[in-house]
Image 1 (cartoon, rainbow, N blue to C red):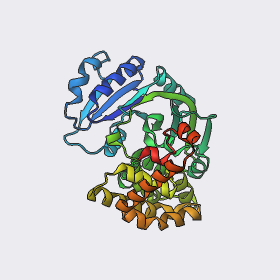
Image 2 (spheres, rainbow, N blue to C red; image 1 turned 60 degrees about the vertical axis):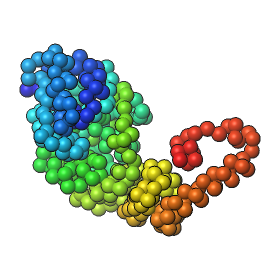
Image 3 (cartoon, one colour; image 1 turned 30 degrees about the vertical axis):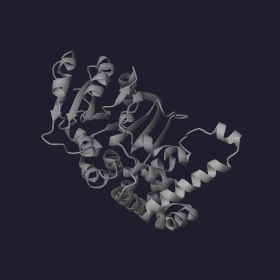
Length: 339
């Protein structure tokens, strides 16, 4: 029986998936199975991928097409439900694997056969050294990046211990954009081992801006804390999971995400208020908590805030030294560059 299922949940990324499979398929070993979950794509994945999958052995690959689009996060949980092997690697359809990715994963599985999770790296993140944790308290305390823990393409799960905990993924994880993480956290025992590896198994990712907005997880991440957790874990988990902006940066980010229209401005006010009220009470910085709440009036009047910000940028530009004007360039930390 195969040891590893590589499951790819996908929706309307047929060509990107076809290109990435061209890198993945030559690596498939006899103890691997490929499972593709078609989330009711406009063009069925079977139509796009059939010529490519013919090179595999009979029974080594399967495409499951859902009768309706069940949502991306539910499609991730379906990977667990349909997995028939001990180990599962959920690979994003827009993530291109490293040339030796499958061999790296199989080697780590054989090295840690009783682990609950193997967490690898990708081209955009380097881990200083490999380490292992045991139990939920140890995991949360030593976790180096929640983003890596929640990045499906870098996680390989041992499925049997998770099967009876999928309900937590559906109940708490879908809105948090972390159904797999919610399932795993809920399944952990004091003996559950997580192995953090240094090997990179993803060479490139292609994010679709229209499908990914940072404020989505910021709104929903709080639901992860409703999983039954040991005492003292929630505060630390929130600090590591919540993508924290300074309050003013958060407001300016939201102004850049939504148009200057009645509907867009209403969305700015609602989203800012929800993020602050849901999350800022957990922040360790009293300053951030108070500033976050103090900015609520500006968030509720985005048109005025946009004019104030535009005026501030004008004054900033007018009084900036010639040398500073020459040196200025857009960056992720420059609010004006993002608006």
